[in-house]
Image (cartoon, rainbow, N blue to C red; front, side, top):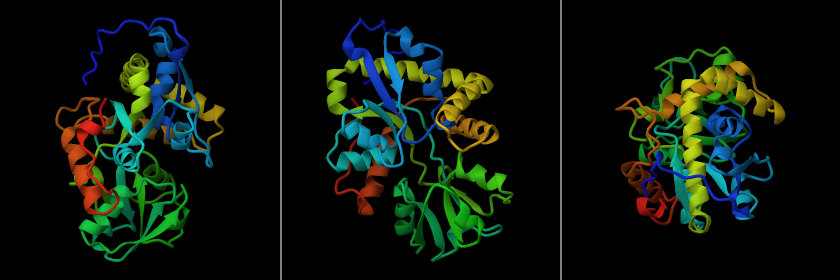
Length: 307
């Protein structure tokens, strides 16, 4: 289904116009477009009462969706496919990421893919589908070491390499004084594993029963991201408001770098523009990879993921 962004009427007043949105992590610039849409009144403009409620360590965004505590969340494409394969029908109403933000960083001067059998840090919280697939397909023999959300084990020298997001942990390493270059950083976006990441998802049942509200949220959120790309300093001010309210341990410099990288990853490599399109070929590639590597029992089709 193609949403016509410039032809949308304000929603009629209804109790159904309240939408609870839970990003998949705590407040940060990764979700700037939604904060912008909220603070600039873009959701209000189309008659939607959006409440942004972040997850906790013990109660994830997906838990909130399952328990009907939230209506919409952000998921990486491979996450969403695995969730669908596990029996929870989810549909993509807005795709923000056009490129993959994963990377593997090794010690200075060493190509991580040349270190067969290396001890590599990978997150306990998930986001591990593509690294696991690459390890299997390319026969790298990595020994995965589960870590929390920080990079301390790698900095201390207890790991040979670590998975990072180029908009988050990558800059944590930079701020810690590590030298990063093309020699010791493998970026998934520059490889055959460049699979789109973040999009906005709702359950298929919610979409079928609240179609206008879902489309309205997607429309205003897209406009929020477009504004954030054009006004990054002002968008950063808004992000820091949410960061401070959530008592998130970060700093403005890191969030500024994150926002810049998130916007870069939203731009198509060919056109250089924010496309906001879930690409069928990426869905097919991801489905094939996850199925072949045993992460999914079935290959999820593009048609299963769109409204």
